[in-house]
Amino acid sequence: MEQLFVFTDDLLVNVDSIDNDHKALYEITNALLVTSAGRSGSMEEVVSKLWKYTREHFKREETLMAEKQYKDLHEHKTEHEYLVFKLEQLTSHLMEEGAGSVSQEVSDFLTNWLREHIEKYDRQFARMTA
Ligand SMILES: [Fe+2]
Ligand SMILES: [Fe+2]
Image 1 (cartoon, helix red, strand yellow):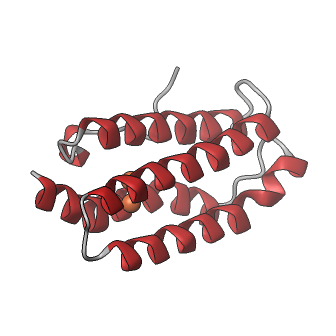
Image 2 (image 1 turned 180 degrees about the horizontal axis):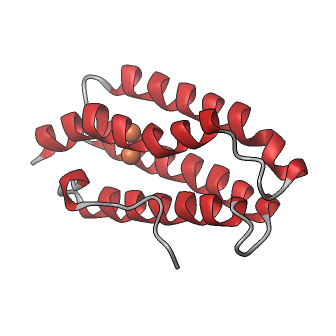
């Protein structure tokens, strides 16, 4: 399968549970782009999988942060809420419209949303727990 959206090692934060989740999210996002290009699968299925996994991942991170008494947990949570809102807002129409409906705006968002969050927010937490 062609990789449109690839997890690269510079995104590792060196907390295994978080890194594994990020890799999975990259795979699902890649599947979404591939599905949208009409190559395989159902858009509805892949979009709902992405929403579900995103929420689960954010919850896992927040639980870990709470356990470690991370001082910026509140800010991080707010950022997660914003990303969920943005993700759902930008991709909800894909479920009905199906393959071929990913606009440039949505594609740009999907390409960048996780990368920016990982680099700016997740890494900051990971550094603190190391
Ligand atoms: Fe994350
Ligand atoms: Fe995060």
